[in-house]
Length: 119
Image (cartoon, rainbow, N blue to C red; front, side):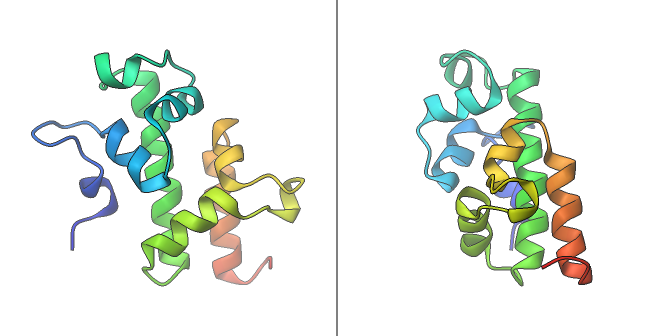
């Protein structure tokens, strides 16, 4: 099975595909751009844009941690990422936290759950 990052890679390139990430998350490409805080044209015109790629890498990092927590169930990890209000973070979803630049906070939270410290 391909790694999560590999499944989101732009075919024939070394960067992540905004389109593939959008499809996985159930988002229009404009929503991906908005979350990455880039122009709505950037995903199509400049998919290798550093700000966009940093956001996509953060998505992949959080989803990989969530997928491990979900026992390898990618669809459950994506559902959790997009929809689960986290009590410890004023009921923001992991997606909302990531939009605020809190990828590492979400990963630390996932690891604390996996370790039994929270939950």
